[in-house]
Structures are given as C-alpha cells and as structure tokens.
Image (cartoon, rainbow, N blue to C red; front, side, top):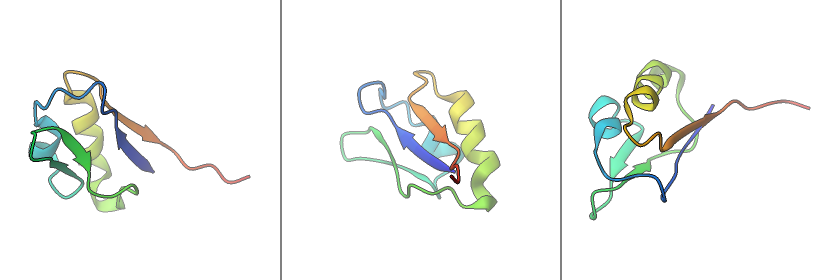
Amino acid sequence: MKVTVDDDSCRGHGVCAALCPEVFTLTDDGYARARRDEVPEAHQIAVTEAIVACPERAIHLEEETCL
C-alpha cells in the first residue's frame, strides 16, 4: 500500500502525525508529509485511522496492483 498527502488539500491539522507518527510527519510550516511511500504492515490500521480522521480528506491510499 502506498500513502500520499495532497499538498493542496492539507491544512496542517496534524491529526495524521498524532495517530501514526511512524508514517506521517509535519513540515516546518506545519503541513503533513508521508515519511515513506510504502506503508509497513504494522502501521496499516493506524494509517487507515488517519485517513478517516483527516478533516480535509487530504490523505490517499493506493493498493498496488500486479499486472
């Protein structure tokens, strides 16, 4: 699974970083960034919680597909 934060939508609430600091961080300006593209299996539930809790719906998760 790959996680991204939409720079245009993020307003820096910091909910994601509070729920899953292993995957999300805040920039010096207070906006969220994914520390890594790939979500480790151990953090998938916390990332899903961050997605649901994001007030701006700025976090997106993509399932990898094999062709």
